[in-house]
Length: 139
Image 1: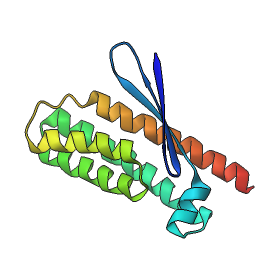
Image 2: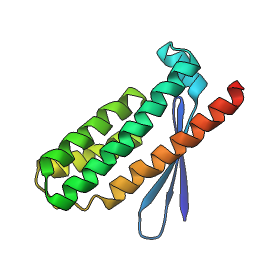
Image 3: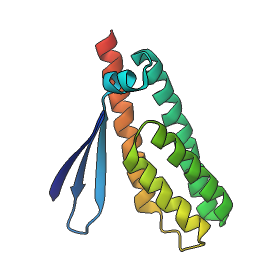
């Protein structure tokens, strides 16, 4: 497995590529740095990230449901929502995966979105860990 490390300001992303070329992402969000960048207290950033994570899990459910029922408009709308919210936090990998899903839905292309959905899911899990770390450091 080949490993890559990328630093995007307050978001450090590590990618691993297995022999099939599939990427897995682990995002480490630096809450303090993000708070300073946006100009909000860390507690506010944590709450906004919690809302982002919970809303994104719901949107991923909408994407899965839309794929299952063939409702491409639902898929595109949910992916667009994820993309915009992710960009607000400069989570470019999550936004890029959501954009792939959105574009496939808009173009009525075959929706083999499992990899992109997994990518977003892994990013959300990493953000949840970052939130937990931030809360522990605030205590």
